[in-house]
Length: 132
Image 1 (spheres, rainbow, N blue to C red):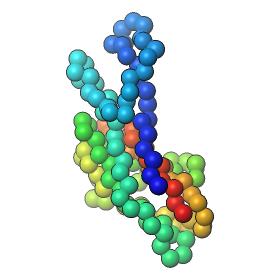
Image 2: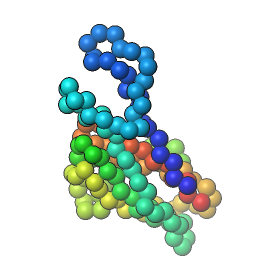
Image 3: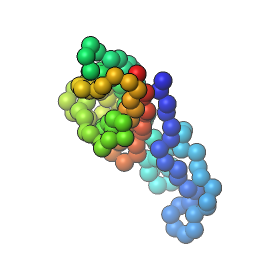
Image 4: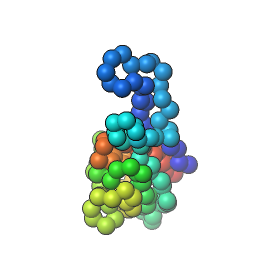
């Protein structure tokens, strides 16, 4: 099961004066046409997650941003600390990147893996994957 959710709520306003308290739906993402600020969220799409023989888990996924190049990707297993990871091609520098993650030593049972990709405008996209 894969769950995707927006990672932030933006408030209406131009940053000069009081902001409206009504949130803007960021699940669609956008680029502010007046300021050129990238508010486009990054999408993380899980391609596959499979348990290997023993205690290993392999996860392949793609991160995509429509407005800015990606700059970093991290994962957290079972609410642990964020661990940085490299793109499959070795450099996180484009608007679409493929990632391959091998987790060794994951004991049997249910585990929560959270994947986070961040673009050059610091917009993040997260995906939660339940590993069985």
